[in-house]
Image (tube, rainbow over all chains, first blue to last red; front, side, top):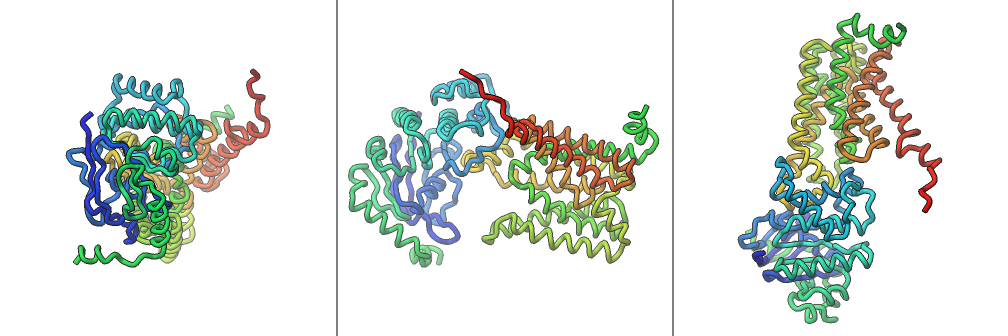
Length: 251
Length: 289
């Protein structure tokens, strides 16, 4: 697995002209394991989407080096997936091979075997024919992790992977994340549980639209920083005035 | 003998019944799978709105060429696509949700359509446009409906995988580099085409019935996508067949007859389907350990 470094260069992403991610610069080192932490509305999901390439930056850029965009494994928030859709577990996992099968090509025997192995790795052996609607939230999250395994991507982006997930599943999935880290993949996860971050994630980006602190987890998750993040979020939740730095760039 | 007279003889005896039957079968084959996807995308009401939106275009076609399906169909296609596109744009650039903008667009176009037809035609013409008339299905009409059904199946086969993915997990499709909006637009095109195909037999007000009701019925019986599509297609074609027979013997308009037949399937499934009311009220005892 060739490691990939992702750097943000003065990145700004806006929703309806209000900045959700504001002038963030820095980098996720190749093979690093980073948690993104911050209050609600801090722009964490927006940042993840910008890195995944599904949102266009309003200013600045995301530098993925030589990495093809499709070589990013992205786990969206659970709410964005229609779980009532009549699809079975095996088909969902196989979709992880999209990069090679695309819209038209058939699934090879080898890929079917890999999907099988992925299900085994997340502890869902024998669930192939079950419909995703019949799974519990934890089981479904395991399916999505199996799909990530199937994608075999150099960069893995997880948006709140453990929200509403039971402790046992969380532990199992954290182990997969540690494995990915061990294999030299660059992993970035949006998380809410500070203790979990302290325990499992070496690096942290604390943000509230802007980066409050970025680096070594113990240094970043300092009480002062956390308080600042909370204040920033409240300050920004007012209808923000247009950003002076943006105006300059546009003129 | 009774059965032969009731079910088969009308089609042997009358050319217009044969043509209507072929049109209904083709319609069911196209609308069945499209309806299932429409339902799964939670766009049932959007489909309803679009069928009404077809009306003013059909009315303009009617102005120029009378009750000719290709002319009215072409007009309806343009109008339907225009409304689909405009409401998509409106919902993208304003804070209105898509369903709200669809509702306002279709009310406008329904009013405009009725006005145009009633200005230049009799109330019988208006009834035909609104509720369909099997008598007017001629050979060009059959070719059109058959062509649309074939086109629908081919396009669905081509975009099936990305379309399913776009329904299920749009964020993932975007992340792996698929263009979700492309498939969405292609799908909307199929919906409008099938509505245009449907409105001759069913009328603009009922055209969507052949899509939505069979799809809803299938939800009571199956859980996999392919089974849903097969059941929906079967129900749609059967409703067409039974509805035509009822319409013939009872002398009622074909559109309502076909849609009501589909509704009968719906009520039956609602009561006795695998996830229907009876099963829910009287569940089997769960397995003892």
